[in-house]
Length: 224
Image (cartoon, rainbow, N blue to C red):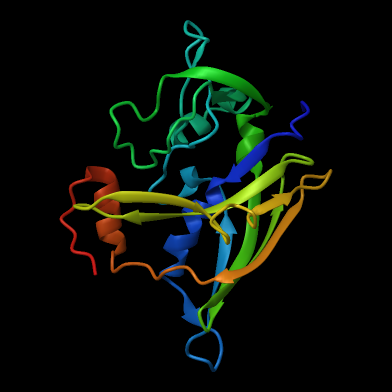
C-alpha cells in the first residue's frame, strides 16, 4: 500500500447510517430523556436504498483513462473493479447521494491516486453507540480495516425531503471541524469518542416515503 499518511479520509459511512438509525432509538434507562442507538457502520452502497460512493472514484473505461466515475453497488460486486485503484477528482466534487444533478456518477477529471483499491476502501467497518441524555450526546465508535496510520474525520448529514429538498453535511461536534478528527493505528484500527450537543431530532418521514423519494424523487411529503 502506498504512503497515504497525509491524506484525510472522510467517514461517509458514519454520516450515512447515523440519522436513519436514530429513528429507531429506544429508551435504555429510567430517565425518559435518555436514549442509546447501536450502530454498524459500512459503506453507503450497502444500505437498503444503496447510494453511490462519494469521494472515491474509479477508471471504468480504459479508452478514457483520464476520467473517473462514482461507484454503485453493481460495480462494487465486480471482482475486477475491487482490484482497481481508487482516485480523487481534480476539482472538489460536491456530494450527490440521491443522483439529482444531471451527471451524478461522472465522468469527472481524474485526480490523484488515493493509494488503495476499491476492495480496500470498502473493507473498512465500524461499530459503536450514539447516546443522548439531557440535551447532550456521546458517540463511541471503533473501526477496523482502515488505512494504516490514516487520518479520518467524522461527519453527519441531514436530508430534508421534497418538496423542499436540502442536503446538509457538517462535522460532528464543533462546527469548525476541530473535534471530528482521529487517526488509525499501524494496523488500521481506530476509535472515536466525543461528547457534544445532541443532534436535532429526525422528521416524520416513514421508510416507504424515504424509498419513494430515493427512487422517484417526486414523493409528495409533508414534513413536521
